Amino acid sequence: MANRYSKSRIRSIVVVFPSRIGNTIQAMPFLRATRRHYSESWITLLVKKPQADLLRHHGTYDDLIVFRRNTIWEIIRVSWILRRRRYDLLIDLGGLLKGGLVTLLSGAKRKLGYNYGDSMDGTWVATNQKIPPLMVRHRPKNNVDRYLAFARHLGVPVSDRGYGLEGQPEDRDEAYEILRAGGVDLDRPMVGLILDSARRRKLWQGTLFMEVAKGLSEDGYQVLIISNHPERVLQNGSLPPSCFDFTQKLNLRTLPPTFKKCSFVVGADTGPLHVAGASGTRAFALFGPTNYLRYMPMAPGTVVIQRNRGLHCLRRSRRIPCLRHVCMENIRPEHVLDAIHRHSPASSPLN
Image (cartoon, rainbow, N blue to C red):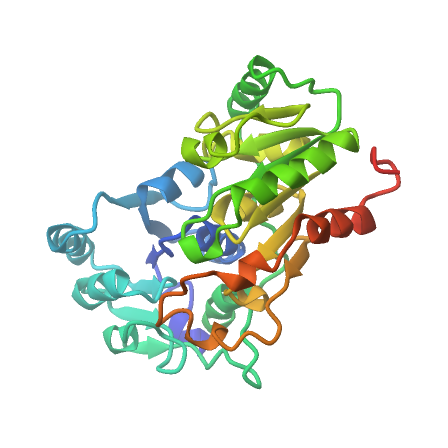
């Protein structure tokens, strides 16, 4: 199998990246391993604008093609670019409909994707080569392992599972300036609370976050409130002491150095939480309807907090809208604070 993908045969590669920030983070170990192995090949990434900002200085690719909008004309534009370049290998990591259409129209010689059982939106029909099945005894692999399965199928050695999300000195300086301007003392311990999630069913109530913030403030931490939606913060009234509102002030370039300064980060299953894990910061991940085995940050020290045992709605949560989000309501502030207290290092203000 490896001879089919030998370095002499694969001179140009295009990778269709997942559309979510969290999935993009989880695909970074695959991208680093592929870059090391195919060091002489031209590697192009097909990404959306937020992913382009995140990968700007990653150093594992030669070219970026950016999806500007979700329209059929954009799919045709991108497909035409790929057809003109005639790539030796296309890898569809996302496995979604838009990427599947681009894969089908790309004109690449080899189109590698998921098999029938693992693909979504029927995208397996767009590829002419498949990786082996991923499910093992009905236990889903974490996305990091799903993406690394592509590397192993190509014969790419996987020597480490690092993310390479180091950031640039100018991004760090900008992040520190934002924190200082917001009143944060960089020499005191701080933690991050991420209020957002891309899907409503994964959101935790802002009032519950504020109770956690109050508890952490009383424990001696400075608490950074991180969100892109001002209404999520304003609806909770005044912030507890030692809490600082950074709503819409931090972006994907300044989040990694910010999280590196934090003792830990608390948030639901969302992209910035994966950024925290990839930055080497402990993450306390609040999981509701999604399977933590597949979507949790694969970083040392990650703690999953989940209270959905016995809920029969979980199996149908992707197909039938959930009105109450009981799996998230069942997580209480005392559950989060108790987990933080149990996993805090001896040098933290909690001890």
